[in-house]
Image 1 (cartoon, rainbow, N blue to C red):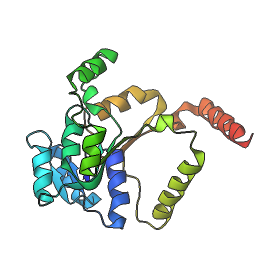
Image 2 (cartoon, one colour):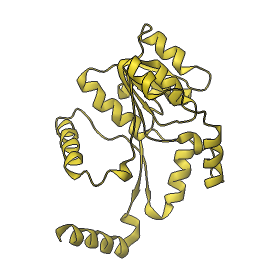
Image 3 (cartoon, rainbow, N blue to C red):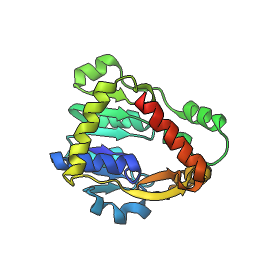
Image 4 (cartoon, rainbow, N blue to C red):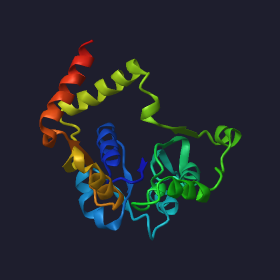
Length: 218
């Protein structure tokens, strides 16, 4: 299994879910974070800046390719990923981190990143002939699938109660420092999840929590 942006919260969580079912995890991350990643369960490390992850991952798998790939990068990465898939392998695309290159620019930066993104080089026919699959994930567009989300969450909760997985927290900041939290992530300093806490909001925090509880009971 190849996981991009493996030092982030999603990458670490995916690794901890994959390891109990016997997966070998190949991880891409900046070299500065490589020292911490083996202890988190990652087996092979790729520095995505100087190394071609497609070539290195193929070497690691003795030419077969990866069964699963999680791609949060975008740009040319999905094209490389689908070529790297083993037969019956699947590529999941869930972010576009190449668009978050600095702390300014907003939509202009995102538009520029999309403009640099090459056309996908795979088609339904090519995927069918190669026995490969590509899918996308946007959690913000799946909240209506309550029963399915509950099943997934129940399975993850079992792993958590058994001690097979646990969250990796990089930093917790008060809610009113949300911009600093985003900058911390954009500067690629995080090793795990960055949390926003409500404790520093005093009475407003308590009122917000009460309103959510009342809404959930309705």
